[in-house]
Length: 168
Image (cartoon, rainbow, N blue to C red; front, side, top):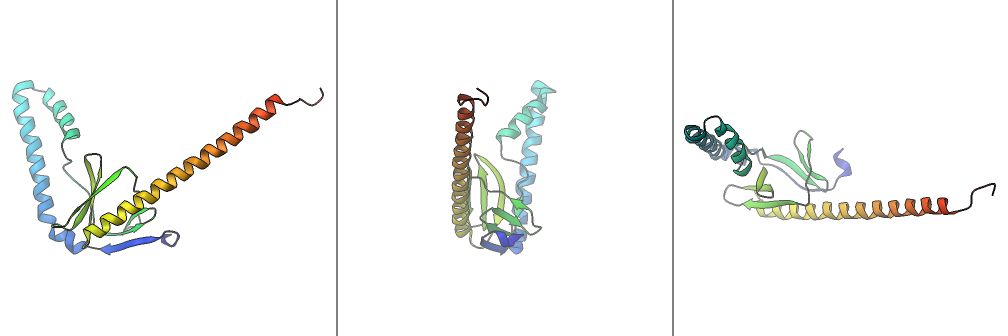
């Protein structure tokens, strides 16, 4: 299955992910404590509505858990993890390298979607940006072909209606 894709980068950075485990756990515990604190404070003011406010805040604040991938391949179709699952890369994604902690964060808007651990974060970020451009180009070409086919089918339909009918 992988043979039909061009592989740009392949890595197994499980050791980097394990080394960063404490910081990820502390971040998760911190956000859970923050959400719990918000609920407790709001409960005194607006009682049951505090849960609704919490859910709205959860849409604005960063997520509690961010999936992280350590063993993967970057192909022209997206990211393929060690289990063979494909994570698609969309043109609207933004990539940020963290040199200190050795990972690349993938963002959609302001929301962090997942992290890719790697010994070369800047290189992986550039590769992901290049893959994103390749996918954008494929989407534009597919859209042009679709428009062209649609235009041709409309022309054919228009000629059939305006032409003579047999037997006249």
